[in-house]
Image 1: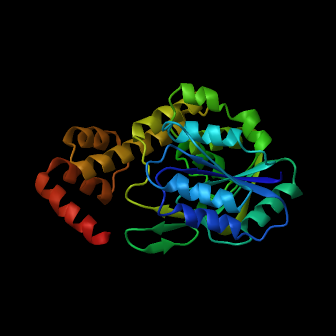
Image 2 (image 1 turned 90 degrees about the horizontal axis):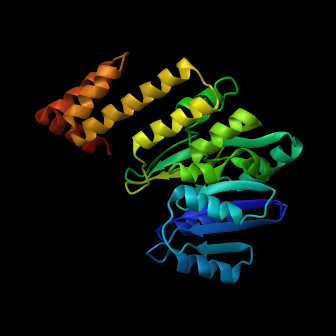
Length: 301
């Protein structure tokens, strides 16, 4: 099998057809499969998957007996994949370029030393019914890419991996034992540190942002990043960048949920303060300012 399209889904009955159809509609000249890991959905998602499997023999869904969470479900689904290459797609996203998979596989075939390739993605804000085009364009830079992945992090949208690189360099079992909840950061941290990689400067995938999308506790991200700081001896500059991102995010959360103690702590740790940071801090300390800022946030949605 040349390519496995690896899809994770949970309670995605409204969106999963878009994801699957976008794969089935790809114009490609090699064999592929869709391996879909349903994480014990409680809606009709798995029934929809079973209906597809009856029509398309290369659509291969399975359902976990209990909800495992993203990282465990990712590993379980990856274990079912037989493709030489792995393209990862969330159950509520879709491929908007009908030759995207063909181009990514051709890129990997042209250079057997590549561990993975990254490409562009759009962002669709469901609650606004608006999209931004090629959202990650500035990130696809060979000079700064690895540093960005290790300090800030980025989703694996538009990434196509060589499966043996994932098997060789990403210790999913260890990361599950450590309680990591997501797959994006560990994969890119390990592969950018151990493999050569390249980019396709086109947008292939649309990432759907919705209010019920998964959002991990940002403290989990901090602990995970610090693990990789030690694993790859990243140094003080990386630590400072990670801490800066952490406290910036903590301040945003404090402002959104009116948490004065968190806001005060985060603000005290931020060295380069601009108007935005002052506004976030004030709205985390004053109920009146919090309500005003909340009003303007609602207008922006």
